[in-house]
Image (tube, rainbow, N blue to C red; front, side, top):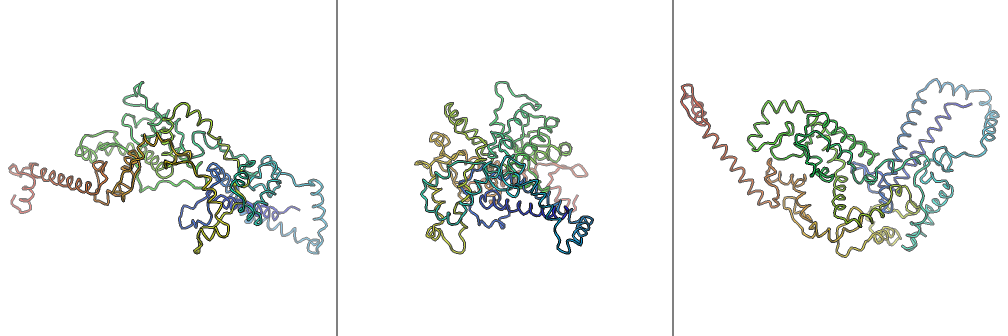
Length: 548
């Protein structure tokens, strides 16, 4: 007597379980999802510092699989609700006389048959855990001993145990957190592995791995090939990634294919890093161009010596034809710059910083780092106290301050975490990407002890000459120049950090521009109808007066 009503009930039950599973994960690990709209982010949940970044990315992919199943089951449910024939069939079955009289003997017999054929609830087929069907979406349910783990989780989440945990010492807490670790995935998502999502060089989405694209770039057809003794390194390729190389034959099919490979990798990487945030296409009104030198035409791939020659070239027919012919190439380059600036700016800078740091290490230091590097699979494991039994608190609302929370016993755990995470850093050195202070010799080599102030960027202080020189190309500095009246020729104002110097140079350039226009008016010769020579300014004045 199976009807579509039972199928609808199963779908509704599964949708509710999926909804609860997603909510539970965001509650214990708020870093999984942050709304892009700041108005929707109420900052009610405090991020858990004990959870690794790799675990956050892993759970994002797990939630993505939940969402995909939720959408599929929702479509199936809608189709069932719209199926009038099955609904009519169900109503006819329920209108049988025995059911109307309250005789459910047939139903009870079916239940007995089911209990005889399957006396116990069978484990779910997904994964190797022994969880029940309604537990396949629970955290840690992919482990074989999940019934025991579930009992421990319930004990940790018990409010009476929460007060007991707050009174524990830091040493006891650390011992509990470093206890036996288990896979954090559910039985449904047990096949998700970070090692299959990211390469070791990508470090679960914190860095980019473009070595295959680097090899493609080296093999592109060029007007002048690389000298065999001076082939650019991988680090040089990344530094000039969005800079047009004038030696490349941009009209070749190989270059077009290379740009498509780059876009494919970037989009795939963004989707792997942010599986819950769909990629947005660049607005048609925005144009992002490859970086290039002054007086360099991207469409014609040609360098010009002077501003006047460059501007006259932009108005010519040759440039218009080249722009029309290379529209596809320019669009691909624009999309690459958009993806990097919008989504991968942090990962790109981290990769360059890590390459520079690695180059300065000795052979022994590199070997020691290789031993200390944790495998990607370590992000799939965690102890139960890292996720459950913590005194997660609400953000300060309604005038509740930190001292009030301490009086009631809350907030001590975060303070303990901060004490535990403090590193020995007497010289107050910057923290590297590995979470440890950088070596003193590297700090001295980079000149990070010297501070440089830029008045144009609202008196921002930059540590080190490298960071100071780099900020001249950033949007903050360029916007500051625009506020001072600079509209073009930004390269003339490079290395200027004083507003007074910028204004003086701007006045000088404007004066020279006016003198140049005046000189052109006085030196350009024209003739009237009778062949009398005169400069253009006199000619226009006589023409207005009607004396010609």
